[in-house]
Image (cartoon, rainbow, N blue to C red; front, side, top):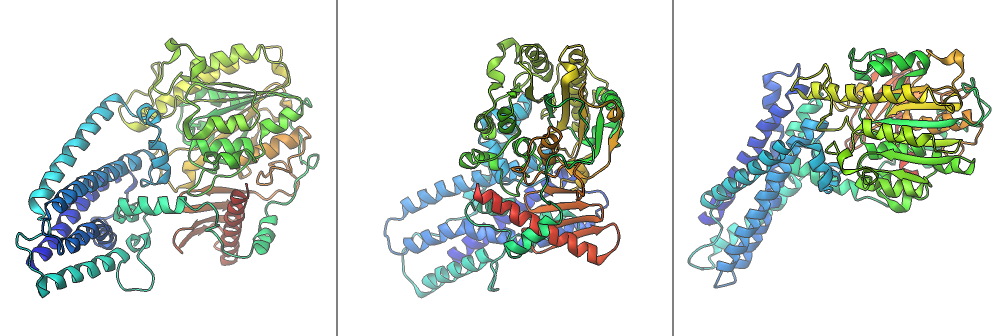
Length: 621
């Protein structure tokens, strides 16, 4: 009996110390998001973390305890010890990898490790492209050394629950039964009616403190479980009829020819869509961002129509493609682009424009196999796809492939060979981690924020050269250029991941086919990147009814709003206020600009209706 309780007490101590150690490292990593947080609040995370930590430890310990039960009935138990040693080597390795990965993910994305991060890590080429060689080498060595030390410590400190003399005493049997019961109670978090969930670690209005208190093993497991739901809607708040009634208030049927304004001087212009990787409004001076980071974009605003309240619905490139090209907003815990059977049924700008006589192409200097992007592009009828395979080896000057200057130059040359009208999309990549660029810039600091500014300055330089070149072409007067970011970023101002300002992005329409009276003007209406298809098609006098989630910015009677999805929450922004609906736990954090409770409740209802019907659509595809 002493042996069994010695095992459980030492196991608890070992795992609690391990999780506490990683939590201390988490505090250091999370420091940029922790302004205004007191020492007492930091210390509270160790108290509120205990229940989830204990639950994970009980899950880990249940196998050794079951082996102890088996060992009661066998004479030779050395093989059980060997199996348990292997089990603990595997478990310790997995825990170290997940907890270390959580530190890396939080440092770059501002969120805990989740199913999206795991999906990203499955593509090893993208992982190596996102990190420096030195970081990969030293990180790998650190993982191996720390894992080896922890395995040794566990073996020497935690004695496995087996006796040298096998006697089935009442006390021995009782101890095993008690430990099994305690493990199962610990796994479910106690005897309460509802098993424990992540809300047990939530105690503060500061999201970063809740993240620190949440066990990363539990969080990842919960995220993977939620992401596996493919055939049921987890966001059912009301009847679908009531949800449709609420949604119709903000997304009524839209028809071409019912616009307040027509901004184009020609009927079937050439269209160039430039998707800027990770460009946030925080590097755009006219949008309140840092000065001198993107001077070429600033110049372009003098000859274009700038949208000052544009938001990305998602926070990754794979979400952006389906948002911008298909008008389908991103979904929490999902990315529809990864479901091949669904993306084939999505509408898209390319499909619609091909039917209307347009030639289509897509340019990217990197690997399109990542996140099923190539399958999506092919399913949307894009006729010409250019990626890293189409460039010479000497052009592969980025860890991701070909830097933006190389790709813009190729597009510039190829546009002269295209038959109008054409619809071309180019996706940049140089503003992706690790933010390495092939030119000197005014931003040469070693901080991540300066590296981000440096890469944005480089892409802006390439954008400026491209625009200067195409304005001399004969076809330019019949061309509109749409410049928009694929998503925002927490850099360079280290914004909180859930801060709506981190999702605010530039959107500019320019080109020879833009009417003169709109050049240098601004549109201050709230909008999403997935509003672009409906807006563009209606300007071309082409039906956009397939794009029911795309809210035409120029439509008569338009309701202005922006929808933002996170993994565990959605944010809804209107002229009346902002509401963030936590869709994992029954907590709602809201900010009402008018201090009107009725308005706040209406926002909450609208947000629920929106995500409920959006996911219904996701399931129906």
